[in-house]
Length: 292
Image 1 (cartoon, rainbow, N blue to C red):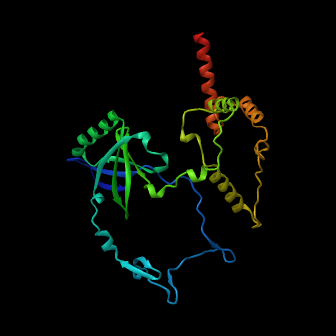
Image 2 (cartoon, rainbow, N blue to C red):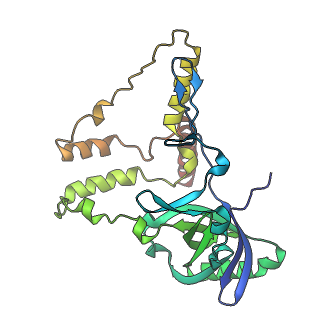
Image 3 (spheres, rainbow, N blue to C red):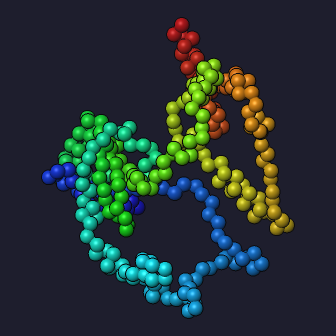
């Protein structure tokens, strides 16, 4: 089934308009979803919409309201909200271009793919994509979708464009207040060298496929075990804490030296990946021997 567009409209750069469609770049991953259940009966708990002093109400009688003062609301119908005219509902105006590293990662929210809507839009779309690539810039604009106007950044992504929604300034907390009590002193040079060596040994190309959600897997195992159990008793498994991670570091120098000494060249990953790494390492070693 074809993916449904998150937003459809046009990107505008000065007098040039490019019809595009925007699609979600992410999807829900593996997750365990729990329901609230009434323990004595084993039945799922349902929730009703109620008004104090009146009781349950019909869904058709529910309307949106904005509280202007305690207990007093301005009531708005959906058609009134939909009628609010904002140009960004259908047009994403590119108003500014910035260096990619100018945007603090704190502001990035969610990624989306942008594709031309039809063949007629392709030429202008490709020109915009390659111009951004050549200039090494990110385009900024705003679009209105699902009841809010989003600040967005657009950059080349393969044959298409990647749009990332950004948080507004009033949605981001400044870190200064949280870091105010941290000492300004520079670290000991030897300690810094040891920590850098440890980072170097654990450095490898990023591959999201190398990591799995271990908590979800552990929950699945618990659910499977509980489903087979006839007793109905709680199953508590204490994973414990590795000895090397218990308590605070007393001797940082000794801990870093020991860590550097026991580290391999790549980080610990999934068992299947480890096998591939070993095989790759053997092949590389053989090639080096032949070369010498």
